[in-house]
Length: 195
Image (cartoon, rainbow, N blue to C red):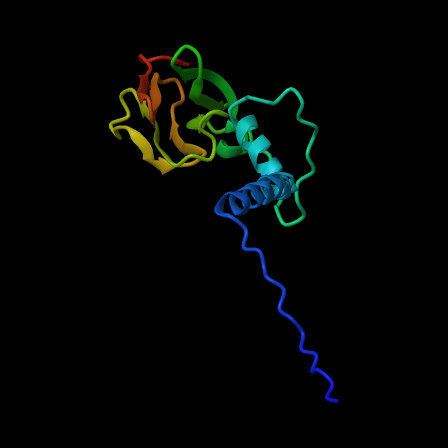
């Protein structure tokens, strides 16, 4: 008598319906999206950049903890002061602020060195425009010297100047400008500081 040959029988496979595939895909997407968001948003560099960008405009999130700068980012050097830009021995004697009433864009400074008799003018960007390459200028003229106006004007990201002229016992006319995205701000003083 012959023995029957046992052959494995194929089990019927159940094909998932379109609806069940859609549900399982939707569930896996729902599970993976928050993981992706957490992975990218919690990176320290992204958070530090976002907080730094907000801080540049004077906005600090209430819940923001002080973020340590990533090791790859160099420390920011302290901003130069008008006196350090003009040089040793200068002290500020006048200034004018460029503002729209709410935001300060820049400030033009007049400094004087009593030892040398030179005046110096610098227009420096304020916090709102620091680091932005904007048309900026600084100028000075000495009354009766016949030399005309000394000027430094161009596209700068921190300040224009220094512009220096000697003005012992003479009046000076000084000023500056900045072109922020909301308009051009210009100031020229009357003849002043005659001493």
